[in-house]
Amino acid sequence: MNKTLNNERGAGILCHISSLPGKYGIGTLGKSAYEFADFLKSSHVKYWQILPLAQTSYGDSPYQSVCCNSGNPYFIDPQLLMEDGLLDEDEVKSCEMPSGSVDYGALYKQRHGVLRVAYARFNVKDPEFEEFVQSGEYEDYALFMSLKSRYAGTFDTFPESYKYGDNLALKEFKNTVYKSDYLYWLFIQFVFKKQWNKLKRYVNSLGIKIIGDLPLYVAYDSSDVWARPELFLLDRELKPTKVAGVPPDYFSKTGQLWGNPLYNWNVMAEDNYEWWIKRIKKACEFYDVIRLDHFRGFDRYYAIPAENETAEGGEWLDGPKAKLFFEIKKRLGNIEMIAEDLGIIDSGVEKLRAATGYPGMKVVLFAFDGKSTNAYLPHNMGVNSVAYTGTHDNATSLGLLNRMTDQQFKVFKRRLRAELKKQNIVHPFATREEAARALTVCVLASPARLAIIPVQDLLGLGDEARMNIPSTLGQNWKFRLTEIPSRFHCAVLRKIIKEYNR
Image (tube, rainbow, N blue to C red; front, side, top):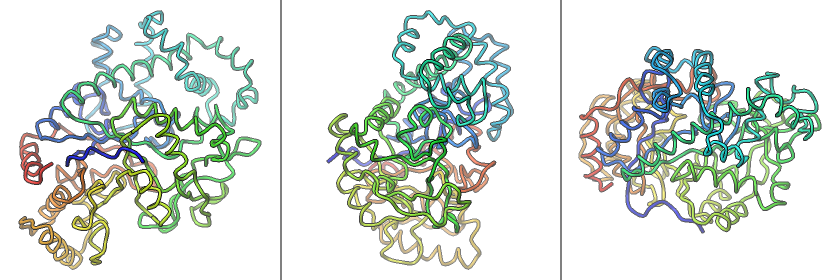
C-alpha cells in the first residue's frame, strides 16, 4: 500500500540531538550537529536516527511533550542566536555548563532566561515571523504555554473558562499576554524551526536522511489534549478514564504504565482522521523517514483503568487498523515509515504491517535465547526490516554482556559464534568488548535492508551510557557524547559498511 524504505541497502546511526557534545549542557542544533553529520558522511552512513524533537515536560522524556509537533527550546543553539544578533558574547558564555550528563534542572532554570533576552531583541515585525504567527500553526501551543506560565499546574487546574476552552475568555487572555508570553512561545518555535531546517538541509545535502520518531500517544498535560479534548477518552472533568501502557513483558514484570490518555478513535474517524493527517504532515517536514513508535497500538491498544497503579489488569481494544493508513496514503501520498513492532505481536499486527508495507524492527539483543526460530537472529531477518543492536530502551550491547555471569556469557558466546557461522562471517572474539563489536557486525551483515547502530554500541560503551530504563524516572535521557566519534571509529564503520554492501 505504501512506499517502504529505499530498495538499496543502507546503514544508520542512532544518536539523539540531546546526546551531542558541546558547551551548553545539552546537544544543540549548532556546531556539533554539523560535525556529527560530517562524521556520518565520512563513514558512508546514509541515515541519522533521532528521538522525538518535541519540547519535553515533566520527566524530561521526549515521549512526553507539551505539544507533539513542537521543537525543544533546549536544542536552540546560543551561538547561532549570537550570529543573528540576538545575544552577545557574555550571554552566550552564560549558557555554558559543565560537560557530562544533561542536568535538566539546571537547564530549566537557566536557558529560558537567555532565550527571553534573545526574544527582547527580536523584531516581532519581521515579515517572516509575522507570516509564521498568522499561519496559526502553533496558536494552541502558544496559548497553552502562556496559560502554564501564568497558572502553573496541569491544564485541568486552570480557571474553568480556560480549562474548557471558552473562546471569548481565551481571546481576552491572549490580548493580555500577547507580547509578554504568547509571542515569546511563537518566537521559540520560529527560531527552532529555522535552526532545524538549516541543519536538515545540510544533512540532506550530504546524502543522509533523517529518521525521526513519532510517538503513538501524546502527554495528558499538553496543548494537544487541552485544545481537542473530544479526541481523547476523558470524563466531564477532562480527566482520563483509561490510560496507555503495555502489559507485563520483557521490560517489566508489572508492565509499563505510561499514563497517556487514549484516543477516541470513533470521533477521530468522523472527519477521516484529520488530526492524524496534520500530525503526519508536520512530521514529514521534520523528518525524511518516520519511525512509528508502538505500531501495534494502531491495530489493538492496551487500555488501563486510570485509577490503576500498575499496568496489570488492562484490556485490549481495537484501534483504527488499516483505515488510518489508507487515509494517510490518500491525502499525503507515499511516506517512508518504519513500524516499531516490538513487544507483544499477534496476527493482527502482522496483517496491518503487511497491509502498509512498512518494514518492522529486529533487535539483535533479543535474538540469543537458544531458539533457532527466533525472528531477531540476523539470518532469520527478512529484507523488508530494520535491524538494530538495541534501541534507546535497551541496555547497550556491552552493558548487557557485562551483566552476564561467566556461565551465561559462555553460553552466549557459543550462540553468537553459531550465528556468525550461519552468516558466513569470520570475526573471532573472546572478551565481552569483542563480543559487543561482533554484534554490530552481525547487524550490518544481516539481510535487513537498513541496519541501525546506536552510537553507544559504535563506541563500545557500557550501561553508564544507557539512554532509558523503561518504567523508571530521574536518571533517563541524560547520556551525552564527550566528543564526536573519532577517525578510528569512522574508518572501522566505513570498512564494515563497504564489506557488507551498505
